[in-house]
Image (cartoon, rainbow, N blue to C red; front, top):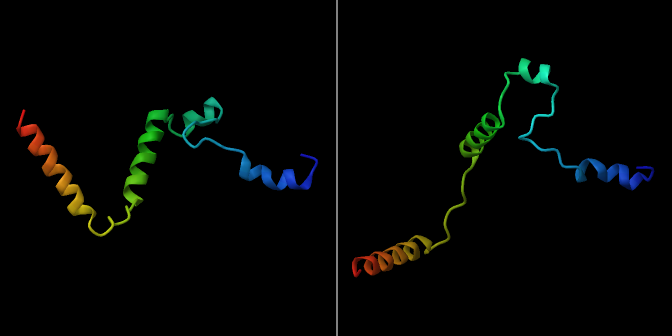
Length: 78
């Protein structure tokens, strides 16, 4: 940490988990006592609400449909 380059890189290199609560017990309780499962579900909802998947490449839907037709044809032969 005595080198400038190390001090500058430190914030970018240190990973802080976003789903683990490191607060003291009393602070955690005052904030609602959310479990890891609660935090995971909240993050999942946030991601699903904001995420917009990129469109499929041209022709991909047709290729997917063809694969499904082939699979259905194989399963009906059994």
